Length: 289
Image (tube, rainbow, N blue to C red; front, side):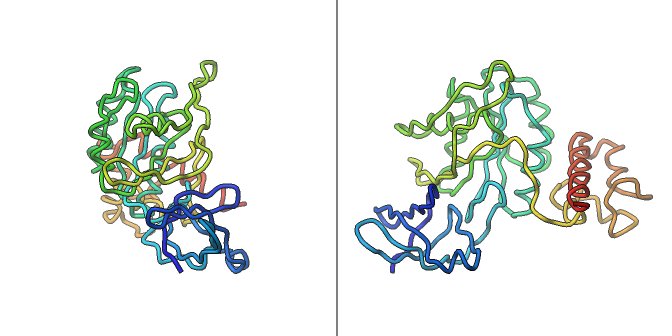
């Protein structure tokens, strides 16, 4: 029996890195019967069959897992948004940051494509930096900020995530010599990104890190949680909610709501609060169906 790390899953095959070798594996039948899903980032035990092929026998305990994209045992998530082409989608950003809080994984925010313009940079740095998130600015084209991003990835197992077209693969190509991940220009007509990454894959960086490039997304549902569990996923709302009159306050229109008061007083960013309300609405709609 050998132990290894699942670095890629595609076409029904599981690529497991064990020592200097990569094994192409299938699953033991019981995994399908038990509906136990193996994720990229899982530590597993495999039984060799012949040269470089094997069968996965066991999943070792996880320290965490993310709902979408599906990945396990990540130290940190680098959430990438572009400043132009496509323009920042702050609703998707806040959805993803809520997921990182739910998974209790450190999040770093990367504002990419600063070469195309610096609109909103200062506001975004102020808004998200004040919440405790590390905020980087980068450009794969001009190499701006690549040293900072490289330092963040060093000695960590990281997930790069963000909407389609924000430049995740381009940044990895700029950071890792010879990588040559597929990239495409965004649609000039729609100003939207195109999917180039088709699956999650862990890639070794020159600084002893592992980084997962993930498919872009245009929508991002939260896991199946209650509405009461959403507020702690917004760190600034969680900060004030204990001062609400009612312990089950959803911060909508309840009397003596400390969160609504903080929004009116400028202590909570109105855009973040509106995105929280939109998520609540989506969750309520999903609950009805």
